[in-house]
Image 1 (cartoon, rainbow, N blue to C red):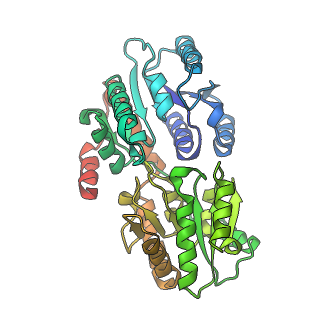
Image 2 (cartoon, one colour; image 1 turned 90 degrees about the vertical axis):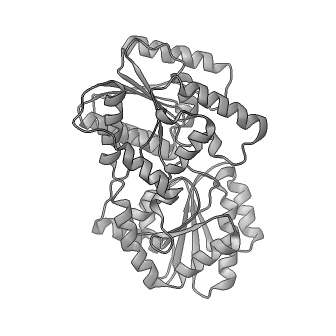
Image 3 (cartoon, helix red, strand yellow; image 1 turned 180 degrees about the vertical axis):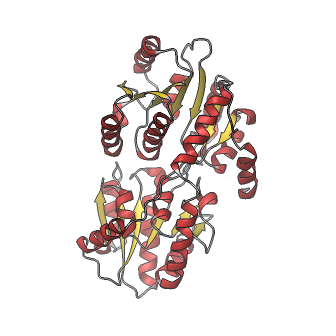
Length: 401
């Protein structure tokens, strides 16, 4: 098949997903074109894309500036997308990733036989802060555009539920979780120890990691508040390492000072979070919403237990007392209590480390790519040896409800 992948928000998990998908599809013999917006392409995406282009010379790649917000420049972006499809098509599949790319791609005048697949990587309606008229408008837009899609991919049971509530027809939806290849090797473990040493941690220091962009819905202030409570209740040496960048950085640093924990909080900025995961003893995650965080898979594959709010992917990956704890509803004292339980119980952390790796192993990249390729073949009516396991996806949905 000939596939066109389009992404506007080429950052974080969505950027990683698209690169893994492109590589996996090409490895399976599919022809892949990738159109991305350089306006929100982070360092990890740009370096990953450069490596992929070097390894896979057959990849056709083209940047088109697409803004996050709706504005007059969308008309120009639409014309450029139309021109690209006309010059390089016809495509069997046009698969759009992220909200804005999905909006533009599904309005394209497709040639007969071209199918449209959309992966939002976090529907806007997942955000509980989206209310009133704005929420109704987004629901109307998403449900209307879904009718122009042959399939809409939810990456978690939580996002599937949200999609149904948004008004997207259930028969358009399929659940395909994100995937990550596990790497268990001595060098990786050694790098984790080297990172700890470089940060000046003693062997008995408990390192709590937080990996997110410093934006409002990631709620970085929450983890600082809980960390301050933890410091008041434990005698163990603990440090909080915050990895990420964004417009709230100055405000978050001020908040750490106000809570009198700034000496025990390290801000590492825009570094490779996955590479740092082996240095953590615990991962803290405090977002209001997610679709399916890659950070969970990165932590679990490194044997790191997780304390998190209830967001997409949490129900699939985290079992209370087995691979971590889910704090729902949000409560700073309760979150700090879960952290303290892990900080003060090394045997529990060790037991959870084994369970964490086992859980992460169930969510590999190959499985994700296989499922998406099968979806392509189904919507294109191409005969396949296997079919997407919709029953398994439904069972996962029902178990987490």
